[in-house]
Length: 167
Length: 85
Image 1 (cartoon, one colour):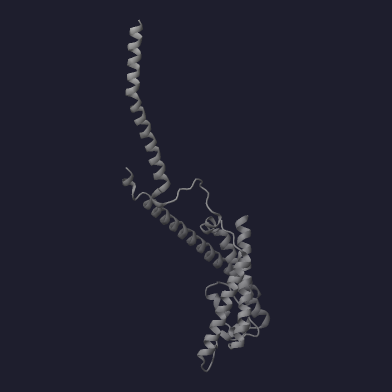
Image 2 (image 1 turned 180 degrees about the horizontal axis):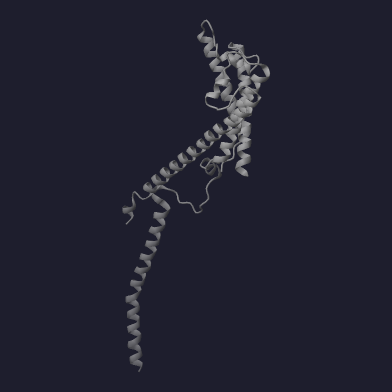
């Protein structure tokens, strides 16, 4: 019995001796793999990795879209107001023969240098200003969106350009 | 959405329009000729005191700055009001 126990103990010791290097080797491999993954993600092919996903305030403001309707309404009010003010100035102070503001009726149907013409000119100016402002905001937002898409695509391409080197 | 700084927009637009009128006026003054700025002179219908001379260009600068400033402030204020609504 005692002999059998001694033999079993010796066998277990031997098994431990054999398993210990294997376990050590496996632990080292896991450690190395984790370290390699951390290195790759932190280097990111030169791109810094941020712990949080927050974006700086000024950067966010620089790429924020314009409110199309708001800019349209504001531009319409300004253009309409300028045409109305110019018309009223001529109506009140009298017309200079060389100031041919009435030529606007070529484009603005119903416009004339009169009190009613000032109102009609304001409405026409509002329409034209709204289209200009809305169109400007639309094109500007589209341009910023395209620009951001290009920047993002380039950054992603750069990030994955040496992807095969890490395999 | 972006919110605009109304005063800053007014100052920028006012300065641009003022400098623009100042430069145009002085360009015509320096160019000379029999009828200096015959068409630009018509601005005096809206800007009393404006002439196509060096002094007139300074007066024009002031007028254009005021108009540009008002335009910028109104533009910014209305935009902000509508955008925040």
